[in-house]
Length: 352
Image 1 (tube, rainbow, N blue to C red):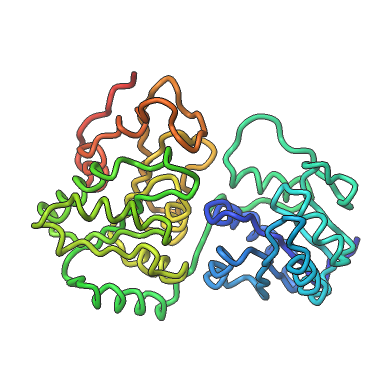
Image 2: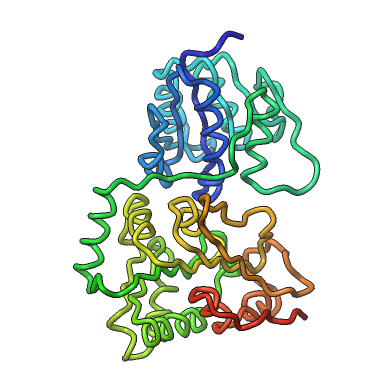
C-alpha cells in the first residue's frame, strides 16, 4: 500500500504499558512523517498524550470491552470512523480492539495474531517466542510490519506551565522549595503483592526528612489512598509536617509535573514508576512478584534507575496477592532503599 494519509494507533489500556509503548509510537511517527497520527486510548490514561507532542489527534475511548456496553461501543465506533483513518496499528492484543477498528471501517488493520482475531486483521504478526521487555515487544510488532526501530526510550515532555502548576500545588500543601523533593509511589493497581511494606516506606521517608531535609510527596490514584494513609501515619510526628499526601489529587499531567520537579522517586512496579522514568526523574524501582526483565523502567538517556529485588525462590510469580509471606517485598530493606536514593552503598541483601 502507499503511505497512509491518516494513521490510528490503539494504545494499551494500562498506564505502564502505555508508557512502554511510546518508543514504538515514536517509530510510527518517524515512518509516516506526513501522515496525521491519531491515538485512541481509554479515559483513565488518555491524558498522558498531552505530553507527547508528536501526536496530532487524541481520541478518548469509553467502551470497556464488555458486550453489555453496546451504547459505549457504538459511540467509540463513531468517533473512530470520523477520523477517516487509512491504517490502524493495534498495540493491545485483544479481540475487542480488532473488532472496534473493523466496525469503524478502517481498511488496513495491523497487529499481533492473538486472541482469535487473525481474520479481523489485514496484516497479522505472530507473537515473538520467549520473554522480552514489554517495550521491545511493541517494537517487535512495528519492526515486523516494516517500521525501523529507534531507541527504546519513552519520552514525556513536561511543559513549563505544567511544572509551574505542580510547584504551586505542592507549595500550597506545605513544600518549602529550598528542600529537596522526593516522590514516593507506595501503591500498585495490579494488586497488593506488588506493594512494598508501608512501614518500610515510612522508614525511608522518615530518614529522608531527618537526614536529607527532604519533603516527601506520596502519589497514587484514589484507590491508593489507604496505602498512603498507612505510610503517613507511620512516619512519626517529627517527619509528618514534611510529608504531602497527594493520592487521588493529581491528574496524569500534574503527576508528571510533580515527578519533573523531583530529585528522586521511590516506586513499586507501577504506572507512576514508568511515568517517572519517562520524564527523567532519578528512580529507585522496587520489584517483588513481577519480572523486572519484562517491565523494568525504561530511562531517559543519561538518567539513572536502580531496580531493587529480593532473590527468593518463588519470584517472579506474577500473582496479585501473595499466598505465603510476601518475602520478595519484605526482604527489600529500608536501609537498602535509602542507600539507593542517596547514593550510599549498604551492600546487597542475600537471597533465600
